Image (cartoon, rainbow, N blue to C red; front, side, top):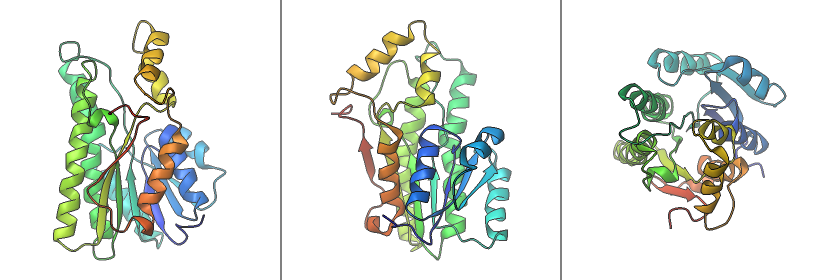
Length: 250
């Protein structure tokens, strides 16, 4: 399919995992993609063999870096049609186990980074229209005692998305904003989460057992939903929660 021919999309957290899978899917469907990540060497290597793809460094917590990236896109003669706010981390810990610094760090990346991205995306797209896709999580809909910071951040993304969608609709910007809610997807992030606990194998089994479908998702599963939301086929979808979680939240 070539649903995205002629469109320019920006993806954060694109060096690996979901972000890289999303970049590849958007390119496969014809888009020109600006791939960004805080890990410059890894990001550059990840997209080196992809057509119509350029890597730019970005720490999503830094407002000045957002401004620099969007300015570079304009300087290159490109107009942004879609933004995928994918960059994120997962910190394990209950309300008593987490330090305040850990909690703030999680929110700075997973929630404040999305806030800055939405503002930058609106500035770039208002008046022409476009699509913002925010990566939330099944954990933004269902709580876990040991994911206090992650739950808070992803729940914030869920409602922030709806607020952005309503604002853009009220202002007649032509910008849609939706959230995507994956269950556990087997990426490098899962490996990082397992490294935080004493029995990683038991944690992995628990991840699988929580999904009625009987397995973890693949990055490609999520990338397919994002490609739809970026495309014109999703013209009537805004402020919605797109859940792809193997039945986890049922």
